[in-house]
Length: 195
Image (cartoon, rainbow, N blue to C red; front, side, top):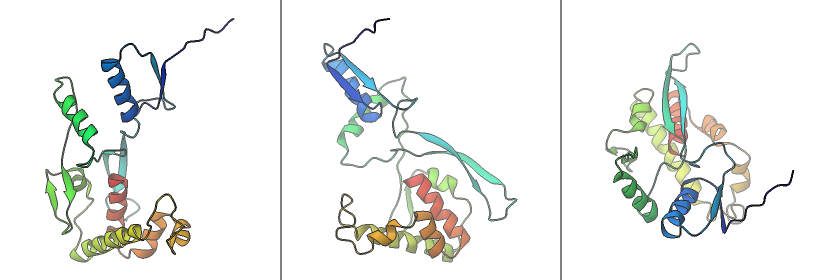
């Protein structure tokens, strides 16, 4: 059987936010352009993805678990990302939209501003002052380590520690350097919900 060849003017690789936005733009402004979106995954949306996670409520092996849904994709946008802000405003204006915008962030004083968010909802238990301080200090240390790598494109070029750090996972680093279990659990929780 002879296969039929279909010609397109344009191929969009990836059905994430960027690919879908490009397709939307072309459909609206250049309907004469014949295009196709190629996506390797079995879904669209790219890094916009929710996942169910279960976290133990204590270090006891028979502990109950907190199960909730978190965003694991590109859920954070900054003030310089004008195009995504514009898209969100367009979607919010659509009555059929299910876009939800919430501002929750940590300040340097580790106070939480904005509406109560997922971070507070997921916090497994209240930390003691000592545990909270350990979390704050580790976050400062991780931020400082990131600043020691001047180029993510060439991390080994100007960072004396890059090769050593490359040999260990973030989880292993935390387990080695965080003393208290609740602090460690809090840091793991921050990593899965904020990265």
